[in-house]
Length: 348
Image 1 (cartoon, rainbow, N blue to C red):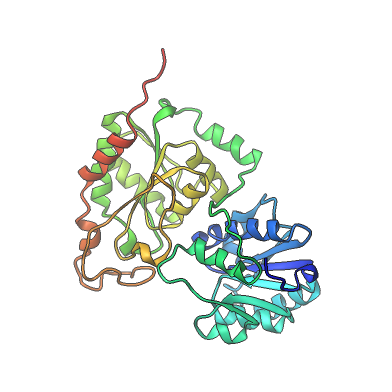
Image 2: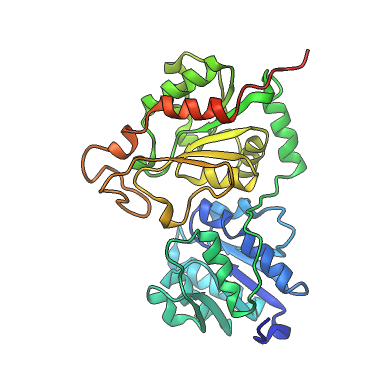
């Protein structure tokens, strides 16, 4: 183990001010830091929209909220003031944002560890090489290489409360066939990341008639999409889109055998709850580092020269055809589900 002023680190800050998936993917880092520095107080800084993801995490003392969406200048200055009062010894930032790195510099945190990329690297005291093509979890954990050569557990984790679990009990109380639950998350913030709506219709129709019980999940803005798919497929399904918090959605996924979704935050929720994932990747590819990582997870994709078209996809297909999603056939997905998750017959 390397000696890097380890005894001086009593207050540690971990920063990730990006999206839902990014925050879930730092949970192995949070746990590893707590194991490496068992006597230290560990705080995490996130944006307001992702704060609830980390609720009940036993490794965190405090969640700092950088509410930069409304008045960024005010939030920036206010955050500097808050961080200065905490007197952190070190900050570990998987988020390579210049704004965030500048904030950490001005907050007076003496040791600032992050990735050696983009302009943000000039504001760090310790820089770690970005491992191209590796899963984001691996890169996040590699930030600890400045302290230790130890290998760390890569499993993500979330902590729904007892209240969350009780609510989910009530939501699922009317469902029959709970042994064969599959959750469907057909939405995404990025339109080109979405598998075709009609493909979802054909798939869920096949799943329903094969004997699976279906739950739909997503944000409030995706509720209508879920309802259209259910209606056009002519099936009965529970639509929870917009009706559950992030941790409640995670608890729903824990109760299911499989999640079927796009490349979105949902797959990271399911991975954290150790529920298998079948995901559709179109504009994005595995080497970007955000793929489902557990043993039985599957990615459905087609090999096209235009892939990837960006780290997040686009609002519209740059080529005008969206073949990366259109060419993924529902019958292939249905066959994989039936083969790997055969119907469990209820005991009489």
